Length: 529
Image 1 (cartoon, helix red, strand yellow):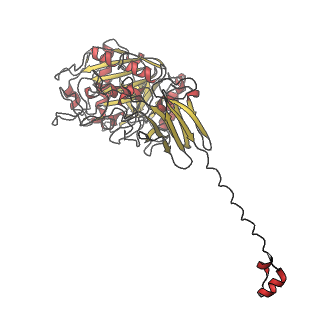
Image 2 (image 1 turned 30 degrees about the vertical axis):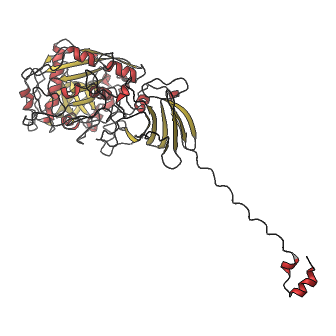
Image 3 (image 1 turned 120 degrees about the horizontal axis):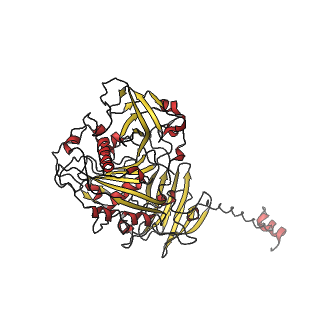
């Protein structure tokens, strides 16, 4: 399955925002900050409370060795500013603190490469630090027993029964330290519509079940002023570490869960971070949310989508512009307010369903429910609405290959108040263009293992339009049915032109036509005929 674009954790506070530029503010819950004069969040060089002593000053040149298990943080594609990076690696000690290490592919090769050592016990040695505070490794060792394939880690994040943990973390030195009750979060994550347990069960046709445990508010060990003094390169590290540590102190083993979300009581510089965290135990869904985000069911849905290995979508790497996909503009928030077209009674913006290709890639459709129409062929299919299991003999998505790295997908969407797709623009056949080629600014092949995948909205035919021409030798025509659309995809070459009609044989000339003499001579020759 295509994986997420990988991004440096230090860049997250400036690259993965839905509403960037907000600092901590006591009572802010709207998409746009009301405290324009608030100081931006920054980090100091002081280690987080309870973390091992690790000098992060690049000027210090003493040799340091960190021991623990190697953890990788992989974050979904950047959403607004274009700052991108590769994987970020950490050594996780027995206290579950994440200490960053900068490891080149050359150094990793000393112990068999990243895939061999990920999630295994390692010793990392170095004497200098990167600008963002990570120990730059010059030597990496691992016991022989640590060599194992990445495939040994828990996978299958999109199917089966999954356990998530929501950790609300509070800055008790600020006003309104508990902007929502525990009951609010339990409803938001629950299995009754529009709770996200019900949302993902419905979107996956019952193939993914998520049960979420919600903790009480955990007090951050440091006041907001501590984090406000830090530099951006380290701020998120300490926020995440301190929130997780508070949960551990409270008796919750975060890494026993398949996914977890950190919900902070006040808005951060950027409002949402989402992706996966690979630990020695498994691959976890991961998100960091501000009130402006967890006040909306749709925003949390997209963050969870990144954590269960769905990819963001849009016509470009930093553009969310498909209203037909929860991983794109299907719910988008803007600095000036909501741009979603579906509001829930209790949880703000409601998420539309994921695009059908997400459903296919996630394993929520069986192979027989996915139809491919290659060049020089045609097909007629009954295409059922996204969000409903296809009926026997029907399909959930149609794929139309273009070349080695591009293909169209065709899906049916129904705007209905009785489904999560109440917020799509209208009922329509929707055509996306899939791009599975590496993005132009993709990290090197040593840093990622799979190409980033983008869904690009091509066209949603207007009401009354029943034929779409996708260029040379591709025509899609469709008619509505009770469960979706009857779709005809025609990729056959045009028939050859008929052969030219033969020129008619000239009628034979009679005697008078052939005669070239004077009339009296022709009369003598031809007579009256």
